[in-house]
Amino acid sequence: MILCDIGNSNADFYQDGKVWTIPHKQFKEFVATEKVYYISVSEALKTTLQSKNNFIDLEPFFEFDTIYQGMGIDRIAACSTIRDGMIVDAGSAITVDIMSGGMHLGGFILPGLSAYEKCYASISPRLMLPINPSISLDALPQKTNDAISYGVIKSIIMLLEITCKDKRIFFTGGDGKFFSKFFSNAIFDRTLIFRGMLKTIKDAHLE
Image 1 (cartoon, one colour):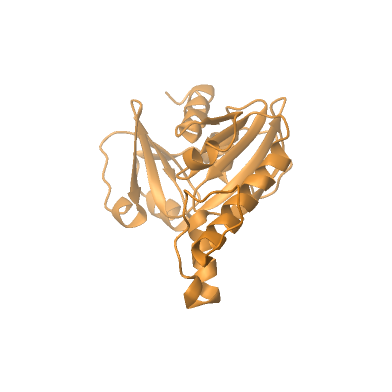
Image 2: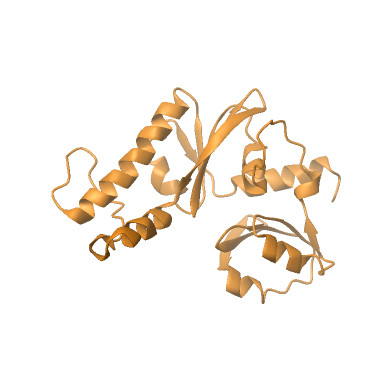
């Protein structure tokens, strides 16, 4: 079987411990002969997959304890394997969720790094600059490119620090490894969402 997590920009796949990613455009051409269990935050692609018999939407099978309204299925999957801690999925958006005793206490959403770049570019052509992941956060910047990178990265890190307190932090997503290096109590797990999907497949006796 293949697992597939369809995000806002890309589709991530998992099979036998291997993970790979393809953009939405290529995903529309993806063909599989075996069973594919998927979750999707893209309603358009989700509608397309409903006509494919070997693609099974896992969303209805998740059982998750939360009062949060409108929580994305990718966030639910990521949180479902964590009993205590803060879960950060750093992709096109950065989602942050708190789990305590197996219960979801709530969370919040920030723009991802690429979204911040687009935001600055929309303000002025002079701010159409890439974020520098190697920016030093120990000294005030002395040029515009560094000022943008410093403002974005440090504000995200400080908010995560305030929120996590002494909790363990579980990072996933395309920029998860980058952010995890700023925290001594962090774990980066690219397969976190897939582990949640595997748990649901097992709990629902789908395999």
